[in-house]
Image 1: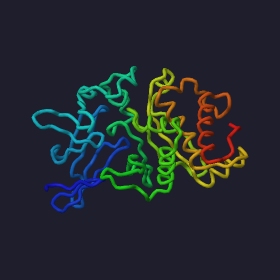
Image 2: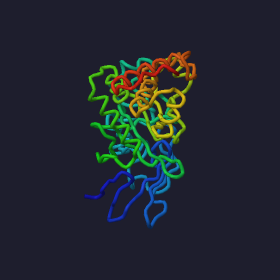
Image 3: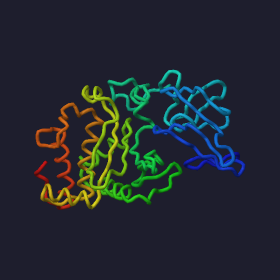
Image 4: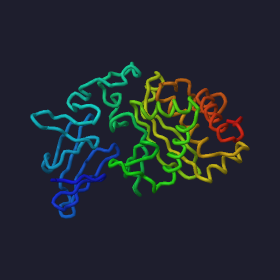
Length: 302
């Protein structure tokens, strides 16, 4: 065995090689304890290499953190579900969910928006953690009721991720077809939906991963959810709305927003948190389904 891969790098000849990645998860540098720059990589937006320092062939986990296959002159990335050609900026085979996204080419990479979105392999809910510099530290995929790392090990050291996974399990174990359908839709989506811990007491917010033109046209896009299920946020909610909040009611409210973005149903979003905003009405209606399951008072205030 030449190399042993771990989540943040690999071990070769008893030497640890660390991946240093940018905000999109592209490997930009490989460093070792004895060589500060073992390999340095730069990319065009759609993944073509340029300006490399160090031997390109030293290691092949590059754009998107995916393996670059240059055998026999292929020069393709293995994105697990499909092969990707960075020269074309597209996949070589059709998207298996192409019928759901008729407005986007079935060969397009990240809806032709590689500066704002990534495609780990599609069909994922991804929980991310950040370091002290606010850079993405690690990504965890929701699988079989838990968030797991690349090796399949359960991620249990983050309280928000644990509570989120618990809510997802509760939804999947329920008999409510609407909740199950909407969770499975974003989990199996072509788009990726990122989730991370929000600012304590700052409230939860779903951000679209696309341009304003895309969701105004009703194009399906992924999201980034900053989730705040802290005690401080629950107290603020209770004071403002006069009813109790729960982890499930908060997650399900944001699930509706994620779902709306995913199916291209945010054209009527006014951006206001009020009864005049159709997207907010839908979110409160879904939240009340979760409240009924937990035998909590239904929400009537926006």
